[in-house]
Length: 421
Image (tube, rainbow, N blue to C red; front, side, top):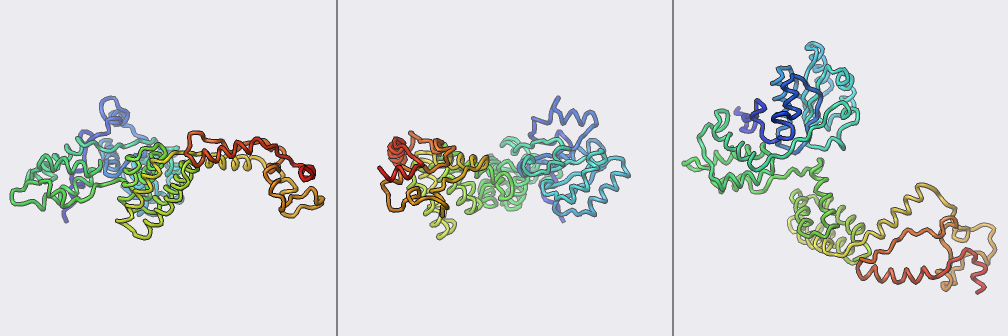
């Protein structure tokens, strides 16, 4: 069976690897290590299709050291034990592990002592952020190396190489400039994606064997994205959505919403929009908070693709609304205080106060007294959690006006005296 074009075009030397100028090239640390015939355990992290596993294999080959290629999901304990036996035979063994962030604790426990003594050199590859996804014990024994997305120029170079290489399409096909630009843009920095689509497009050309933009659009109707619900690209898009709304950039907000819509990830959209509405808009425009909830319910009712309409409405509404984090900050401060210390609730506020005279009890029939009573515990009676936001919308400004009037009233915990007035 013929191997895919992306597999056949895997680089075999550092000179064939595109991009990554921050770690490869003259006087860069990875190049220097290979020149000095030394290597240490490393974890390569970055988007899919940027050459993480390929780089690990090139390093092993250039060092002329034996290596084993494993996958953290599919490899079992027996595979790891075989690797350890191989390390003992060779004295040292490079182990390349794909999806290393999925290495479970049992497998980690098997590897750790051998990473510690250097009998196994781990070269891990992951699309996840290792600072969040890699166990501390593994991470502390490895150098973390970011592999960056390939530029448009890098992708174009790789496509042209694949067209002419004896390992690739052997010069049988050509590609128009507009088709080349289109494919480079659509792949999103993922070279594997670009080469897979190139191969299919090539086999669907007319008799002239020229790949045109129609060929590319036929096999690639939607741009590739590194977004994965289980990986960091997903969380980055979610984070960027909220920050864009908070920054009142409606165009960026719509873009990041579209990134999540591309995977029809309504659950993440729903959670993030609701949190953003209450946290960042809040009292500045509570009606927008309610409209966001209604828009989400509407999106769930109609489903995709029509769900994008109410979601887009909500994002525009939130991004263009005045902002206020005052209610969010207020409850966060209150929670922080409770976590530090608990203060006794005044007896007259308790559900069933014991031993209080009737005149010292809370009076349910005296609404004229309610805003004159001290409600905070005495030790913190003057503490303020709510900080007015004077740059807010008209609704919160009206609340602030009422708040300032209430602050002029002297509150007391002497209910007996209060009732006599």
